[in-house]
Length: 131
Image 1 (cartoon, rainbow, N blue to C red):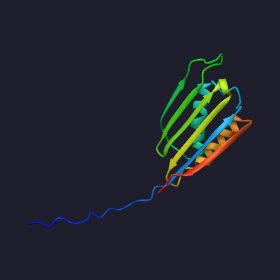
Image 2 (cartoon, helix red, strand yellow; image 1 turned 45 degrees about the horizontal axis):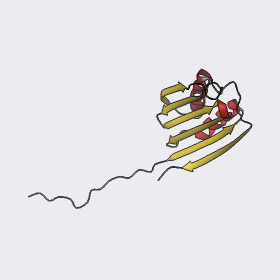
Image 3 (cartoon, one colour; image 1 turned 90 degrees about the horizontal axis):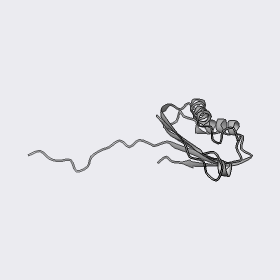
């Protein structure tokens, strides 16, 4: 009869998760409803941050309250994701960049997006999502 091990040894690896996100007020109005420009911006921001896009999805929403529809861009990354959403009726946008691993630089990606969207004011938040 073979004996069963009493415990399974398992290698536990450290998760390195960097999460930066921002709320942007009064961004450059040329971007608020421009799905193509925002998708291009997310692609450029990923490159700046040394991030690798696997797939990108973009959606332009119907007009609301007499304003052109907002846009959502979601980029699935090898490292995790970038999400950008706009609300033209509120002159507002949010950006969410989450990366795993040590090589990506979500801060550089966010700084690039902020430089292009030129919000009049913004708040940046950061979270360590690692174990």
